[in-house]
Each structure stands twice: as structure tokens, then as C-alpha cells.
Amino acid sequence: MPDIILPSISVITVCLNASETIRDTIESVIRQKYSNVEYIIVDGDSTDQTLNIVAEYRRHISLLISEKDEGIYDAMNKGIEAAKGDVLYFLNADDRFMDDDVLIDVAREFSQDAGASLIYGNIVWQKNDITQQSNQPDRITREYLARKTLFHQSAFMKRNLFQRVGRYNIDYRVVADYRWFLDYFMKYEGNYRYIDRLIAYVSTSGISNSTSWEAERIDAMKDMFSHLEIIRFRKIPRLAARIRGWLKGEN
Image 1: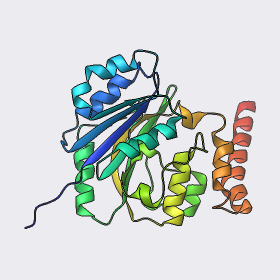
Image 2: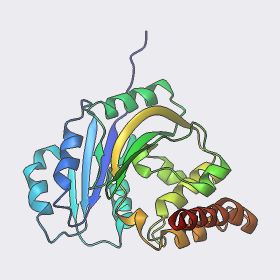
Image 3: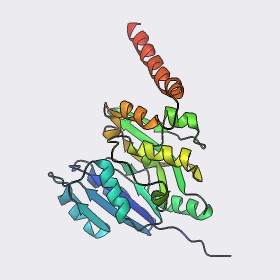
Image 4: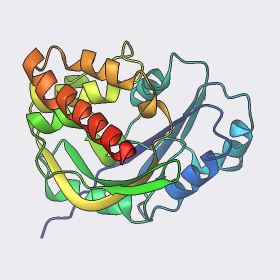
């Protein structure tokens, strides 16, 4: 029986003034039972205690980059450029792995399906006082991408994908990861795999929750979807949700 070859995994954490949350993120990485892990932290020149906290864990960190950047996706691109792992994963400074077996389980999934270039699972997200589990579909359809998207914290991507699909387009300030997924699933039709497993605990109080997110998302969709599709899949459902909210408020 041939030996099972497990991929190396680069975990990339980008942060800026994240002293309140970075410790939990780092500890969730170093508790992982999988050992073939490169851990990269890309800091945007924090001015709080973030770097002091990171220094406490320096022996567990493969590479620390600390310099000004042009936003979260520029920082993520720096992590991509520096990474040496077969598989890349982004864990933001407000997030943490769901349990200590995530990386070993994902590594085994890649070893069992050598053709898979992207493997994704489920996440639990928190917004203010609301916590909810988000289960992803096992197939990513055109309609799903119009209505929703994957959380990047749910997805593990082979490093060579960023040579084929490209890195994150920093012209998009808040939806560059969404645009990347559009390119991957719709242009390149990549070979992907879903696993019914919780990957991470995610805070949605950051960039993906900003007021400019929806407008920029529509812009990212324009060369992938027709105007009618955008109205059908995006604008009408959001208008209907607002109307339901208004009616509920009047009762």
C-alpha cells in the first residue's frame, strides 16, 4: 500500500491593531494537531499591542511581515507571495479554527482527492450578539454565487491556483475575495470539493460588513452576470427582505 502524502499548509493571518483578538487566533493555529504547517502573519504596521502579543509566540510563527499596506487584500497578496505551502488558508485576526483537528482533516481530504484544487466546509459566524452556523452547499451554482458567496475562511486553496486565477484584485476594497471566487468557479471552473465539517468561527463585524460592500459586489458581478440576473438574484430578494422588515415593524 503506497504511503499517503499529505500536503503542507500555509495559514496566513492578516491583522491591523488587533490586540483584542489576535491571541485567540494565534493559539487556535498553534493548537492544531497537524505539524506540516507554515504560519505567516502579515501585520499592517499596528500601533497598539498587536506586535507585542505576536512576539510572545514568535517561535511558532514561520514568517512575520509588518509594514504598511493598501488594505486587507494587499496584505493577503503579500501572504500569498511569501507562502511556500502546497495549500493556502486565510484566518483573519478576529477568527479562530473550530477545533484542533481542522488542518489534519483537511490535509487528509486533499490527499484522498489529488485533483481537488479547492476544498471548503462550513463556518460559524458572529455579528454583534447573533451567532449562526453557515452550511455551504455541496455544489456552487451560478445562482448561489449571485445570491451569496463562500466565506474565505471556509476555503482551502492550492497555492498554484493564484498563478492560474490570479491574486486578489485590490481595486476592490471590500469584495476582492468574492470576485476571486467568481473567477475560480465561473471562468476557470475549478475542481473543488465540499466537506461537511465546521472549519472556523468567524467574526462578520469587519470589512465584509461595511456599508460599501453591496455596491462593490454589484460592480464585481457586472461582467459575469447580465443586468436581468443581477436584478433577479440580487436586487429583488433584498427589496423583498426590506419590505418584510417594514411590514413586521408595523405589526
